Image (cartoon, rainbow over all chains, first blue to last red):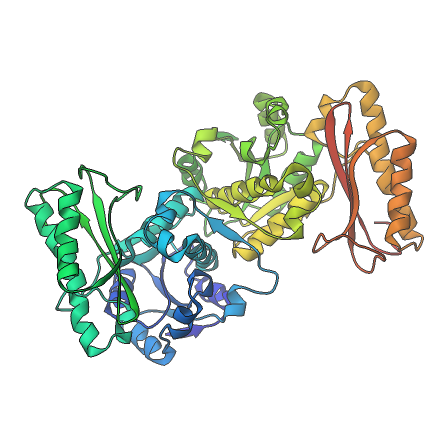
Length: 286
Length: 286
């Protein structure tokens, strides 16, 4: 496995594969966990060459202290990437991605960027995401790119960007990988104290409660939200948002769930912000 | 030569060329003239497959009447494209380019989009250009794309976008093609009455006066602008702007020309807006 720092080196490395074979990209911000590795395993199974990018993108952080505190351990990440068969770790410096004079933004509009994370992290968050992902797609020209369902809104935003800009990359969505107690894998989990780590399991428990309610035939938004909110409230979890939105448009579902819906939650536990979600399909447990 | 209407058909048609050969794209808004054909000839010489797109992009028109009046003659365009060896005319409907729910914009910032055309047609103009060109590049994945120097600012904006978004397409800039009296070829020229057509030659004459002054060693911005403005004023041409800007940044040159500079002009003659430019290099006639 090779570590590549520049776009020119990356393109040169991938040139022999083009035309004859396919390239898979796993975009990450490092601090790899089993969720990332699952993306990489899927990429490995689907493609001739696999690139895993590690770039803590400053433009998608609304909070400078969150950016500063974001965990970084490239040596360990490189070992993990190698262990699942990644061919290239692309780990550029910030100036390689945003050189002096850089001025482009890729922006989507509407509920998919304004709801949930957009409302709570600011509209700049998804603008940072779409711009850097468009750039990574330009750098790598991947046939497929792998994103985790854990960031459901990000997945939807990237899918919309790829459709709107006619980017010839297939977006592959990989199921959320969870700890044994249900907690969704996240680089931020390692910031939790043992006490808070135990409490964090209630987030998945709350989503599971709504999922079971939906599986049991409940389709009114108020009841589904209530079943999740009760778990969080009973465990004194600080909820930033808990919303039920249409899985395609990310508009809030006001009354009844009639199609695929995302129940998305953001909480703050011990100063660490965590998000999770579940897709609800009426009468089905997943 | 084939006429293609959809992105899917275009990609299918180009698939056999990928990997083994190169694809050249000539983006146009139709109403082809010898300037476009020169782009297509260059693309033909450089590439294995040549796509000429015809799409009158509504999002880059600030003036609905200008959009409505924009000349369209696809039958003639197709014949002209065939005559210079184009392989595919890509002429999509507006809904193929902007389907329902489309919401993306690609935006640059700073003088290259705010000066000259940006100031006079509104910042939405170049946002329309960068968004549709990014989409065309996504649709076609061209190895090279061909743009005319006549739209100097557009060329610079597209170059910046490609650099900023790491789009793997080489931008080839082709010299302005002129009528025997110097008038830069433009689809808008056909709107001019015979009387206005004759007057329009003074635009190139004005630029040529400044070019000769620069070639003669004059490097102060005021004198260069004056030499051009005098020709326009003497001929009662209605000037929208006449500016001398740095060729890289498009910032106005306040005092002395020390590097490549663009002298850019926009005029309105008989209700038709025309633009032209010349690159000034001190002590050189072109």
